[in-house]
Image (cartoon, rainbow, N blue to C red; front, top):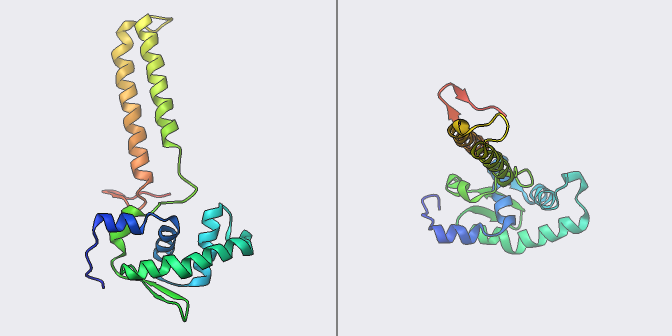
Length: 178
């Protein structure tokens, strides 16, 4: 099923569940193949925001049952994985790059970009108001400079956000390190 075409609605349906997204992401990290036990451990750890050593038996059991009975069969039915319930092996089929936009990047480690944008905007607004009111050393002549500085700050934050969400991004002078 490597030549299968996926519709956007189908992909949204398949990846609407975090456990399915976690499973595919984990498989991609492991080179496309793994056993069920380590997958269960990692998904339970991601869901609970803990390390794999701290996963409880109850957390493991919940994830195991849902992956075994629901999520892995659904991923197999859609031609995304090859799931063998007898041997508990899972293999990601070769068309995995199609799913990248539907997967969470780093669960639990997302930066609060909305707060950064709000802070930059608030500073710009304060600067513009001070320039407009001619308070202190800030005069109306500085208002254009404040506006340009605000635009550049928002652009810089947008570039940093874009680059941080695409670890595979390379520039002409080499890959971006982390």
